[in-house]
Length: 77
Image 1 (cartoon, one colour):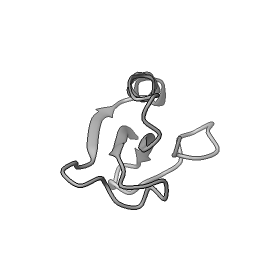
Image 2 (cartoon, one colour):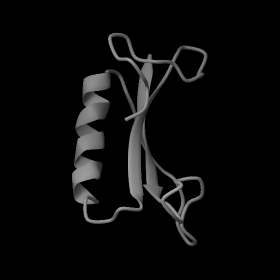
Image 3 (cartoon, one colour):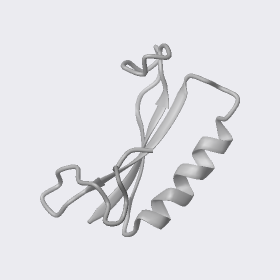
Image 4 (cartoon, one colour):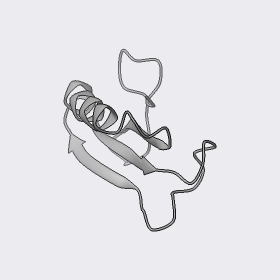
C-alpha cells in the first residue's frame, strides 16, 4: 500500500474547489502511513494560519484505488 499527502488552498470552507490560481498539491508516494503523516503534519503546521488550507493523508491499494490504512479508522486526516 502507498500513501499520499494531498490538499492545498480552497476557495471557501466547503473545501470543494481549489482557490483561483491554485491547484492540488500532492506529496508522495510514501511506503508507510507514518512517513506520510510526518509530511502531512509539516504541511498542516506550515499553513496553520490559513483556515482555507487543508491537507489529508490518503492510501491506495495495489490497484491504485483509495483504501483505509491498516490499523486506522479512515484514510483521511
